[in-house]
Length: 165
Image (cartoon, rainbow, N blue to C red; front, top):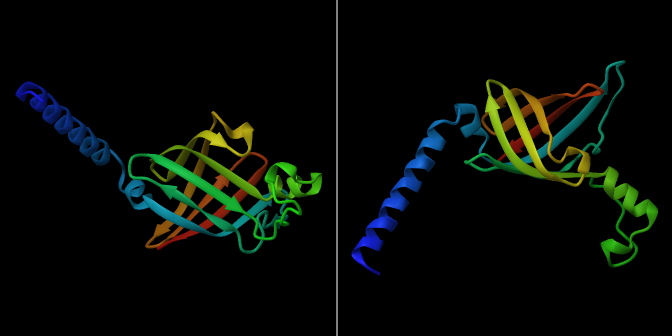
Protein backbone atom coordinates (compact mmCIF):
# COMPACT_ATOMS: atom_id res chain seq x y z
CA UNK A 1 0.00 0.00 0.00
CA UNK A 2 1.39 3.40 -0.91
CA UNK A 3 1.90 6.21 1.58
CA UNK A 4 -0.82 8.19 -0.17
CA UNK A 5 -3.33 5.30 0.20
CA UNK A 6 -2.42 4.88 3.90
CA UNK A 7 -2.99 8.61 4.51
CA UNK A 8 -6.34 8.37 2.70
CA UNK A 9 -7.44 5.44 4.90
CA UNK A 10 -6.26 7.29 8.03
CA UNK A 11 -8.22 10.40 7.02
CA UNK A 12 -11.34 8.30 6.31
CA UNK A 13 -11.02 6.53 9.66
CA UNK A 14 -10.63 9.86 11.47
CA UNK A 15 -13.65 11.28 9.66
CA UNK A 16 -15.75 8.22 10.49
CA UNK A 17 -14.69 8.40 14.14
CA UNK A 18 -15.54 12.09 14.24
CA UNK A 19 -18.97 11.44 12.74
CA UNK A 20 -19.65 8.77 15.37
CA UNK A 21 -18.66 11.19 18.14
CA UNK A 22 -20.90 13.89 16.66
CA UNK A 23 -23.82 11.47 16.31
CA UNK A 24 -23.38 10.38 19.91
CA UNK A 25 -23.06 13.97 21.14
CA UNK A 26 -26.29 14.88 19.32
CA UNK A 27 -28.32 12.20 21.14
CA UNK A 28 -30.29 13.27 24.19
CA UNK A 29 -29.37 12.05 27.67
CA UNK A 30 -32.60 10.00 27.70
CA UNK A 31 -31.62 8.31 24.40
CA UNK A 32 -28.20 7.48 25.89
CA UNK A 33 -29.87 5.96 28.97
CA UNK A 34 -32.09 3.79 26.73
CA UNK A 35 -29.10 2.17 25.00
CA UNK A 36 -28.83 -1.48 25.98
CA UNK A 37 -31.02 -4.55 26.36
CA UNK A 38 -34.36 -4.38 28.17
CA UNK A 39 -36.51 -7.33 29.26
CA UNK A 40 -40.30 -7.23 29.24
CA UNK A 41 -41.90 -7.24 32.71
CA UNK A 42 -45.51 -6.36 31.89
CA UNK A 43 -47.73 -5.18 29.05
CA UNK A 44 -51.19 -3.86 29.89
CA UNK A 45 -53.77 -2.62 27.40
CA UNK A 46 -56.87 -0.58 28.20
CA UNK A 47 -59.82 0.54 26.13
CA UNK A 48 -61.22 4.05 26.37
CA UNK A 49 -64.37 2.67 28.03
CA UNK A 50 -62.30 1.13 30.86
CA UNK A 51 -61.58 -2.61 30.47
CA UNK A 52 -57.90 -3.59 30.89
CA UNK A 53 -56.14 -6.80 29.93
CA UNK A 54 -52.68 -8.29 29.55
CA UNK A 55 -52.52 -9.00 25.84
CA UNK A 56 -49.25 -10.96 26.22
CA UNK A 57 -50.21 -12.66 29.49
CA UNK A 58 -49.04 -11.96 33.05
CA UNK A 59 -45.41 -12.82 32.26
CA UNK A 60 -44.52 -11.65 28.74
CA UNK A 61 -41.19 -12.76 27.29
CA UNK A 62 -38.77 -10.98 25.05
CA UNK A 63 -36.41 -8.07 24.82
CA UNK A 64 -35.90 -4.78 23.13
CA UNK A 65 -32.38 -3.75 22.24
CA UNK A 66 -31.55 -0.10 21.62
CA UNK A 67 -28.10 0.38 20.13
CA UNK A 68 -26.16 3.56 20.71
CA UNK A 69 -26.53 4.78 17.14
CA UNK A 70 -30.33 4.75 16.83
CA UNK A 71 -31.17 1.17 15.81
CA UNK A 72 -33.53 -1.15 17.66
CA UNK A 73 -34.76 -4.76 17.64
CA UNK A 74 -37.91 -5.70 19.57
CA UNK A 75 -39.41 -9.11 20.38
CA UNK A 76 -42.48 -9.67 22.55
CA UNK A 77 -44.14 -13.07 23.09
CA UNK A 78 -46.82 -14.77 25.17
CA UNK A 79 -45.20 -17.63 27.09
CA UNK A 80 -48.30 -19.85 26.75
CA UNK A 81 -48.22 -20.19 22.96
CA UNK A 82 -48.76 -23.84 22.00
CA UNK A 83 -45.87 -25.89 20.69
CA UNK A 84 -46.44 -26.92 17.07
CA UNK A 85 -47.32 -30.60 16.72
CA UNK A 86 -45.14 -30.88 13.62
CA UNK A 87 -41.45 -30.19 13.59
CA UNK A 88 -41.67 -27.30 11.10
CA UNK A 89 -43.02 -23.78 11.54
CA UNK A 90 -44.14 -23.96 7.90
CA UNK A 91 -46.47 -26.89 8.64
CA UNK A 92 -48.44 -25.38 11.55
CA UNK A 93 -52.17 -25.90 11.86
CA UNK A 94 -54.55 -22.97 11.53
CA UNK A 95 -54.87 -22.86 15.33
CA UNK A 96 -51.11 -23.04 15.92
CA UNK A 97 -50.46 -20.28 13.38
CA UNK A 98 -53.21 -18.09 14.84
CA UNK A 99 -51.86 -18.47 18.39
CA UNK A 100 -48.38 -17.62 17.16
CA UNK A 101 -49.48 -14.52 15.26
CA UNK A 102 -51.65 -13.29 18.14
CA UNK A 103 -48.99 -14.10 20.72
CA UNK A 104 -45.92 -12.49 19.15
CA UNK A 105 -44.77 -9.11 17.95
CA UNK A 106 -41.33 -8.43 16.55
CA UNK A 107 -40.04 -5.36 14.78
CA UNK A 108 -36.83 -3.56 13.97
CA UNK A 109 -35.73 -0.26 12.57
CA UNK A 110 -34.52 3.02 14.00
CA UNK A 111 -35.58 5.06 17.01
CA UNK A 112 -35.28 8.61 18.25
CA UNK A 113 -36.09 10.41 21.48
CA UNK A 114 -37.35 13.99 21.68
CA UNK A 115 -38.30 15.16 25.16
CA UNK A 116 -40.16 12.20 26.66
CA UNK A 117 -41.39 10.84 23.31
CA UNK A 118 -39.78 7.66 21.95
CA UNK A 119 -40.41 7.21 18.22
CA UNK A 120 -39.94 3.85 16.51
CA UNK A 121 -39.45 4.04 12.72
CA UNK A 122 -40.36 0.51 11.76
CA UNK A 123 -38.58 -1.09 8.81
CA UNK A 124 -39.56 -4.75 9.40
CA UNK A 125 -42.24 -6.38 11.57
CA UNK A 126 -44.12 -9.64 12.06
CA UNK A 127 -47.21 -7.44 11.73
CA UNK A 128 -46.81 -6.08 8.17
CA UNK A 129 -49.16 -3.13 8.75
CA UNK A 130 -46.47 -1.56 10.96
CA UNK A 131 -43.77 -1.59 8.28
CA UNK A 132 -42.93 1.91 7.07
CA UNK A 133 -44.78 3.56 9.97
CA UNK A 134 -43.66 5.63 12.92
CA UNK A 135 -44.95 4.55 16.33
CA UNK A 136 -44.73 7.03 19.19
CA UNK A 137 -44.52 6.10 22.87
CA UNK A 138 -44.60 8.45 25.85
CA UNK A 139 -41.87 7.65 28.34
CA UNK A 140 -43.45 7.71 31.80
CA UNK A 141 -40.27 6.95 33.70
CA UNK A 142 -36.70 5.82 33.18
CA UNK A 143 -35.00 5.22 36.48
CA UNK A 144 -31.96 3.02 36.92
CA UNK A 145 -32.83 -0.31 35.34
CA UNK A 146 -36.58 0.30 34.94
CA UNK A 147 -38.32 1.84 31.94
CA UNK A 148 -42.06 2.47 31.68
CA UNK A 149 -43.83 3.93 28.65
CA UNK A 150 -47.36 4.33 27.35
CA UNK A 151 -48.75 3.83 23.88
CA UNK A 152 -51.31 6.56 23.22
CA UNK A 153 -52.79 4.71 20.22
CA UNK A 154 -56.25 5.95 19.19
CA UNK A 155 -58.05 2.63 19.81
CA UNK A 156 -56.25 1.23 22.86
CA UNK A 157 -54.01 2.80 25.49
CA UNK A 158 -51.16 0.54 26.51
CA UNK A 159 -48.48 0.62 29.19
CA UNK A 160 -45.30 -1.42 29.18
CA UNK A 161 -42.67 -2.00 31.83
CA UNK A 162 -39.14 -3.20 31.05
CA UNK A 163 -36.05 -3.89 33.13
CA UNK A 164 -32.41 -3.93 32.12
CA UNK A 165 -29.38 -5.60 33.62
